[in-house]
Amino acid sequence: MNENVRLILAVAMVIAVYMFTRWVMVWWMNRATGHIVEDLKEQEAFDEASAVRLQYAEQSWVRFGLRDYEGKALQGLTAAGVVVKTDDGRYFFKGGHGVP
Image 1 (tube, rainbow, N blue to C red):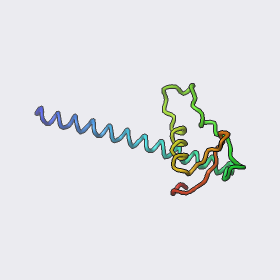
Image 2: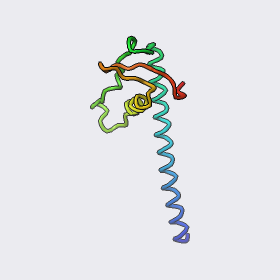
Image 3: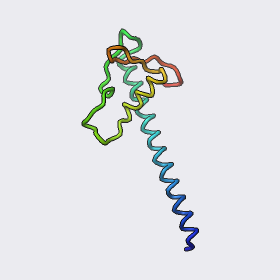
Image 4: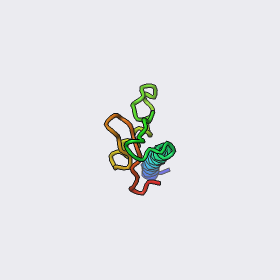
């Protein structure tokens, strides 16, 4: 096989693997986001009085080296204003922004 063709195939393969891993990460983040929202809805945490503590809100050293999708998704939801963190570390679902 020609060197140029092999180089093009190798570059295309690297790009495909990169895009696939990005897609998988987005899928895991979306899944974690849905889990957080459903968890807050099931616990009926809709205002500050009914806010709840979430076990995945704190950084766990047990999962050292593994991806913490729920923690990152919770940070994203609080930054977007969908989930609100109270002063004492509890969370409630505020809603909005197209989240189911």
